[in-house]
Amino acid sequence: MACLGLYCGKTLLFKNGSNEIYGECGVCPRGQRTNAQKYCQPCTESPELYDWLYLGFMAMLPLVLHWFFIEWYSGKKSSSALSQHVTALFECGMAAIITLLVSEPVGVLSIRSCRVLMLSDWYTMLYNPSPDYVTTVHCTHEAVYPLYTIVFVYYAFCLVLMMLLRPLLVKKIACGLGKSERFKSIYAALYFFPILTVLQAVGGGLLYYAFPYIILVLSLVTLAVYMSASEIENCYDLLVRKKRLIVLFSHWLLHAYGIVSISRADRLEHDLPLLALVPTPALFYLFTAKFTEPSRILSEGANGH
Image 1 (cartoon, rainbow, N blue to C red):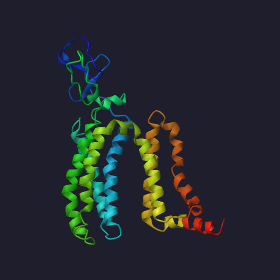
Image 2: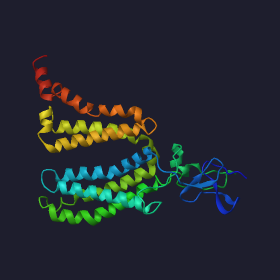
Image 3: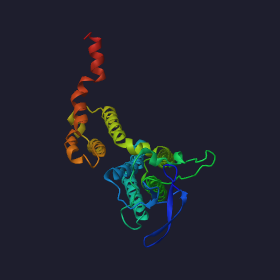
Image 4: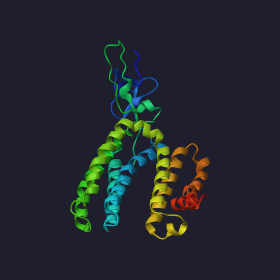
């Protein structure tokens, strides 16, 4: 009897040569998903470039938030901000490596996955069939294995490493801050990690398809806000401090990341020339900043121009 429902399948129980015995129709085991014939098959494919870019985006979220709150609470009050930035990078990098090592195949910096075919693959709990409209057959499983759960594992390792390393570091080097302010960046992480977890649990599928555009929009907005708040109006203002150049190059990397993500692997060679447009937003801002300076606009308005 054929299985009903989009994600219900029959699990292979016994195989002897060409003889295969399958179980009743139901949920597939972890690491498997149904094929066109409604049989559960192991996930043996390697992730596509777009899948790796998605995982990279989800891995960058806690790192960017770490850096933001470290800068927010440290700023010019302490010389420990750089050390905390490096520590946050080390924490997230180690968490990513450990996550890959504990995933299948264990001990190798690679993963096996199932191909993402459609948005519903992320939300199999919404497609449990009811053959007689009374009894529901629960076929909820990770059809996008392991793109959904591996993010939770990564966040867990990030949190553990942060709690092991950051408090000791901050206590030793954050002498320029008061006792109540030293650990605020850590307290902030205790808030945004649960938020990121809920975001992945509820909107993981939506983020999978939308993250390239999210990167481009947010990187453009944050670059404009930063240059405006820093009162950068020309190239000299940009070159006078190394920190500003670091922020600029970081945003350019995000622009390039978003462009490559939108291009995907099938059109990557044709869309690589678009990377030449990466500096365009910053150059446009520098060339037009003098025309939008508030003091100049107010003075011209007062003169009746």
